[in-house]
Length: 117
Picture 1 (cartoon, rainbow, N blue to C red):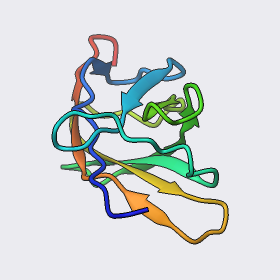
Picture 2: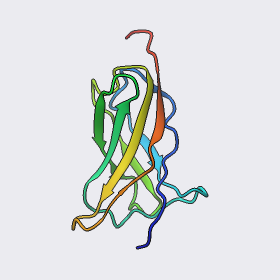
Picture 3: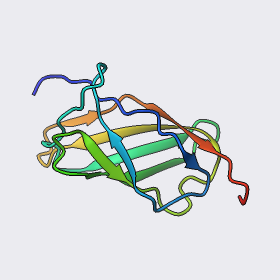
């Protein structure tokens, strides 16, 4: 497997204090083509860090189908996304060897304020 670019889109529509809902991301290259990530049968995580507070969170990713379409799903847990503002997120995938580990380019996840926070 040669070097590939792994990008995730900006994650929009996240509101402070939300958790448990399934979020879907598609890993693509710079041209917008979905990347086959089916060979990554080991650890699959998404990491997030708040740009101002430095709080770090992570969630386990799952294939939506078999990974050949680049589609992954995850949910944040209760208490993870507790601050509005810009978060930086990054997908990290590893095969079961582990002989290969790839990281997406970091992406933005702007979190909106909740009126009941």
